[in-house]
Image (tube, rainbow, N blue to C red; front, top):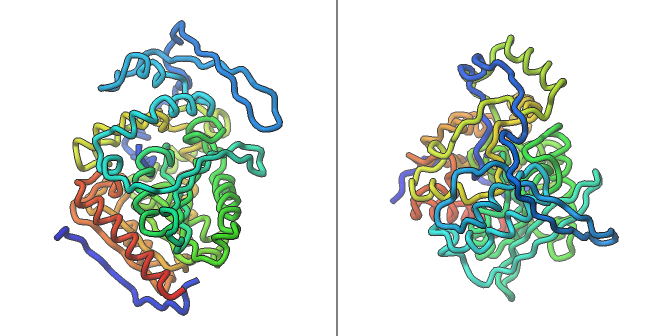
Length: 414
């Protein structure tokens, strides 16, 4: 039996209506040492190697693109020199991230991880791009149950900071879909395969509106229109999910938050003096990568063998956080902290007990403050931040099963 702590509020169905998800975390001792020297988006001279290719979208002429290769990164074990060269492309723009991801698809499927090795078969998947109302091309993906299996509900995913929905979440989505759910995901602008400057969040509320717009289209599909709909957010995606819920409180039948980023602990908040400097600089050079970059893999993945696989998430944003992005995350968590009592949807909060990236005490604060009449908090003893993908196999499957059980119990009376 895997140790967990679970707290439940009585369920009243009559009222039911942060790679690899490494959350950007501020540490006061680091911020106090900043000298604010701008860091170029490309830290090293470009190699003399370029790759030309063309993209062609409906109704547009082919556009010739040029991929630049940054100075060689640390080699990825087990892949060819050619793939290592591709992994070194400058990922600032979507066309290069798409090329890199395409080159590594087969490699991902062969990785020694339970999410890939034990992925359920027969799951129907679809990938597509759609242009949103802001003119940005957004990458979208769905996972549906095997043919003939009716869909119980839609589950809409919000990924973590720097991450994408095309790596570890592939295996997570397949497991949820195999239990009868339609799982839908998108990459935020500036992340994964969607358009936008890599790792740049100029306005968190715009990002939230992009998510609302996309999932509104999903929920309006004829085959889903009468079904329950749930939102699933991991790490920073937890903050996105909460903001989505607060903007449309009656449009979701439940919310699942995994190690959510919804409050910055007081002991790591920047001082008032530092905040004034950060605020000023974010207006002058918002895209600059001014914050020190922390390697959070050891803090996020408890299982060493799975930690080593993080390097294969080749399109994640793992560079120094951009200044405006960091400021937006701080602003957003402060807003959420002041409004958590407005969270009213049926709620499942999941957190690793030894998470050093997002504090499990913050999840307890969210659980205790939310006005939801149906709410559950599950703390997994010894668990790290990436509780869905970075734990021992037995723990990973147990967490997935807990999510599916929670969903099942809230769909049974619909």
